[in-house]
View (cartoon, rainbow, N blue to C red):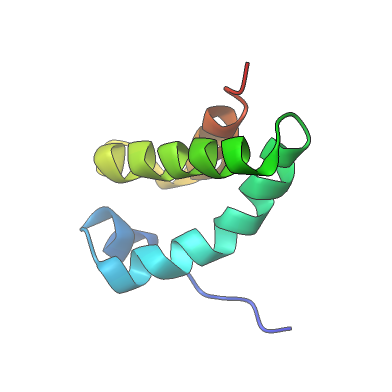
Length: 78
């Protein structure tokens, strides 16, 4: 299986194609994590909120903190 290359600088600048690649890379991982705690529909909503939050804050999140941001956001399922 071929791994996608994510140009995080393009994502930070608002490039929708780069964000789509970013989304497609992380969505399955976040869904798998969220589904461990809540049902699938709630997980979809939570993961969508995480990506929306990332998009809104993408310029201030440091590239080396992205995975932590996404995973911590996804864990807010209580």
